[in-house]
Image 1: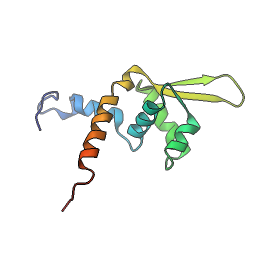
Image 2 (image 1 turned 120 degrees about the vertical axis):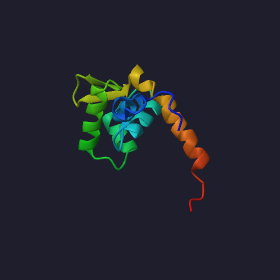
Image 3 (image 1 turned 90 degrees about the horizontal axis):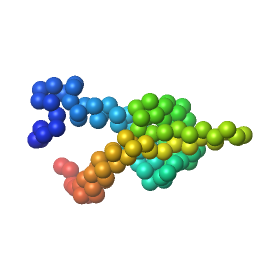
Length: 115
């Protein structure tokens, strides 16, 4: 692999490792996908329905991490019942081309025969 953007010999401080830290976890990429597909925002329960296998607690914790990392926003409306929406911040939107490249790679290789 060509090393154009990563610090040679210092993986821990590389941009590659930093990017992985932002999307590391079972559901972060999936959440980014759904928020991108449903811009400008989605409600918590819409995300939960879209990601069927995720628990409420895991979704809540993952959203908090992504909000802390400034990838997504959380907007709470003062009403009963409570209404909370999530969407991509500009920083999160810059990850969309990476998601698109993952999709392209998968479309090209999903039917490859593995020996």
